[in-house]
Image (cartoon, rainbow, N blue to C red; front, side, top):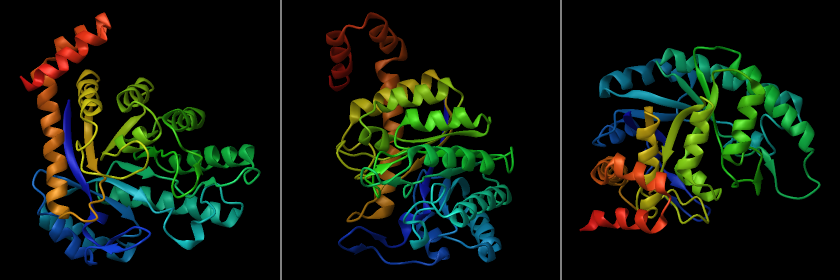
Length: 321
């Protein structure tokens, strides 16, 4: 296993919920200056074009060089603008569907220019809130056709689908690991895979480790996001603050599948110091990796082989002796 840690650049400006705005707004340079203070972070995940426009591309590349940072992933902004409130790839408006496809293709070109190999699609506005609101057949046709057209734009950039069960829509079409994999398999291109968000998997009532193994099984595990929650909402808490055992199982399986790639911190520290919260999240992930090795891969292999829950619980709790 070889991992590198990244942080979302969007965390270093103002962040909002339905009730308040937290932290000061910063321009692009200001965000870079804050992000570069995070110990243990080698890269950034960036929302395009929300955080930098095409005319800022040279400035963006200059800031990357100045601060010694890489781009772990580019997330296409098909969810924040008013135009997308009724969907992007599944909009009833063909003009908007074409615009969404063109923007994602442009993001792939930009990714190439900034030496980024992965573009993520989180289609949070593509879904429905009521029964009899969506034509599921048309929506899924549009999804598959749109993803295929985007990914076919260039084979040297990976297109990663990030799933989430709900919010902002009551039902998001790409809501589970199975649905995301179904799209990837139906599209049938090697450069289409998944970004698995630890918190989204929990929130979808999945076991994150199993979801990771399923994506890897099909050769479609492209990228990882980490955060934490109480399984009832996408809280985006400091990684490792709630679900310790699930986190350890994830790192056991990342070791078993020999994961090589980026891990991005997708947390929302509304009331916390953002730099400290990111550092704590990265440190917790590094500790999780160490704890798995302290227990022993062979010991955990044996627990799984035998399938005795009592033995497994005993093995895990001996960490604290």
